[in-house]
Image (cartoon, rainbow, N blue to C red; front, side):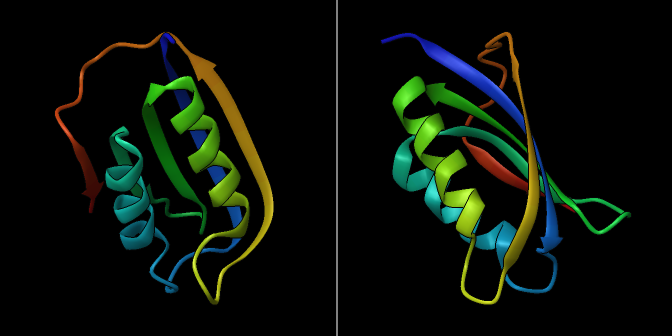
Amino acid sequence: MSNVRAHVYIRGHVQGVFFRATTKEKASEYGIHGWVKNCTDGRVEAVFEGKKEAVDKIIDWCWKGPAGAFVEEMQVHKEEHSDAFDGFSIIF
């Protein structure tokens, strides 16, 4: 199965609920590389790279998020896989 990349924007009650930390845990669990960060407009932005099945799985998880999160909208943009990341990080 080929590797894919998704650039995701998540809107709702997603900051201050450990969304980034839990996303990092899930990404590590699923073998996904990339990053996650808070945006100044209240959204969470993330880039996921990995096996298609794993990226689809974390995107599905992002619709729920951690306890306390409420996702109103999510934009998912498929991009060219770059293999540019060595692990998964939280950007501050």
